[in-house]
Image (tube, rainbow, N blue to C red):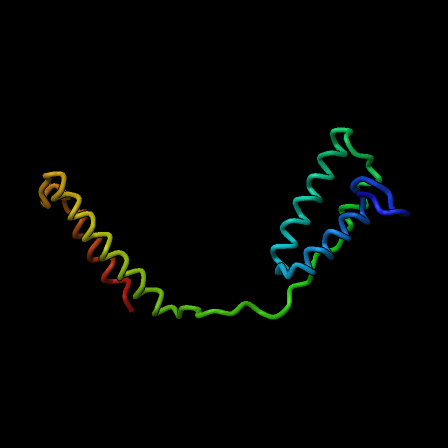
Length: 127
């Protein structure tokens, strides 16, 4: 439904109004910006293929995104913690590969020296 006094179709005003509606729905800045970026790219492609007037596409590409608020939070690993985690997962990978060898009927000797070289390398990664 088109309101009185508005131009139907996609243009800078409709994309801006859509952004405001997304903000009103409580979506995060990243979610809104990803969607606006997709619409911008679509407008450029439509203009390149003659489906949308270049002036309209230019207006759509100038619609501002939402500014991110705050900083990224989380538990960041220290170098030591990263090495321990990598070593932990590497040990599990070796255990799993051994189980697969047993399950398929192969012997550990068939792994060759790569198994033990990898084990030594993974142990040396630990700080």
